[in-house]
Amino acid sequence: MTDSMEAIIAANSSKISPARPGPMEFGVMSVSDVTKNPVSGEVPSESARLKSTLRQAVISEQAGFDVFAIGEHHNPPFWSSSPTTFLAAVAAQTQRITLSTSTTLITTNDPVNLAEQYAVLQHVADGRVDLMLGRGNTAPVYPWFGKDIRQGLALALENYNLLHRLWHEDVVDWSGQFRTPLQGFTAIPRPLDDVPPFVWHGSIRTPEIAEQAAYYGNGFFANGIFWPVDHFRRLVALYRNRFVHWGHGTAAQAVVGLGAQVFVNERSQDALETFRPYFDHSPVYRGGPSLETMVEQTPLMVGSPQQIIDRVLAQHEVYGDYARQIFLVDHGGLPAEMVDKQLDMLGELVLPVLRKEIAAIRAPEAVATPSHADLIHAKYGDGDVRQPKPKENRGDNVTGTSPYTDSDPAQRVELPKMY
Image (cartoon, rainbow, N blue to C red):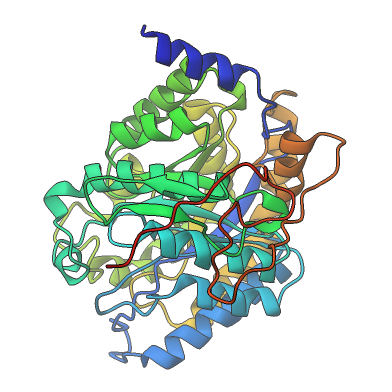
């Protein structure tokens, strides 16, 4: 181990962990696909699909869910090209639920834009925000933003390094491989209470992303689609092991989230038969293994309320205690009224039982997803919370020193020279 690695581990070990013991949370996510209903043959408009998802986010809070998450896409047949805009609308219509992304594209987005957009959302939502970073696997999207999917992993690593610094440093000097250098740059506004949103790193298959999450002490989200359960078990185990290695705490303090598509009905056979046409014609599942095979071998959950409960409880046996379970409920052309019913059934018949059953088997030291209040406590303890206030400037946003009234007056800001 090098001296620099030892210094990083020592610094991490000296910090207060933001992850505190607490209950497991449950959420709903949408990937925002605008897909033909294979039963009726109808295709909703983008507007109708967007507005029904907004309504479902509000219903999710009413049904007792803790989190609502939306994906990010820039290609048809999806509508969610601007997650922050959509989640700001959700924030305005809810009071309690955490707003998240099921994918924020760390590869094709500029980290500067991400730092500023999600900080604004964090202020608008009074801290009820976290985000999940992902690479994206749609190859044609990359060149639309001047990127190359063959560099996807390198982009994910470098871009998050910059995003992390932009959220933790008032003034950033930076240079890398994939974007122009920054000199004397400040991302505005600063995060709420100068505490960035909690970050998840989401992955379906990539161990390097589990390592990245562990290195920064962030959350790791195993997005349970396609692959066998044992594959995700290995990724989660790797993340926990490396979380401990990097000095962030015990394996129990590593924040793990899991995702799975769910379809529930009163009777198991009705659930299978109702969901079957949506499965068979889904662009995700079409042409692959049968519905029964996918239910048996992957995290796809289709059945009665008790079967869904049993499947989630079985995940505890595979992964141990984890912090967040997200259900995908609206993919594959399911009509809006059917999705609404799914949310009601899950909220009434599944969540209360799961909360009770999981509380009975959950270890006392098992952590919850860090809230904004948890992140504040980890940074400030019982001390005063910073509220960044900019200095006056000359009218061109240049002060010559660090731009905030409470920062070190000796810190100079070297801005790029204009020729």
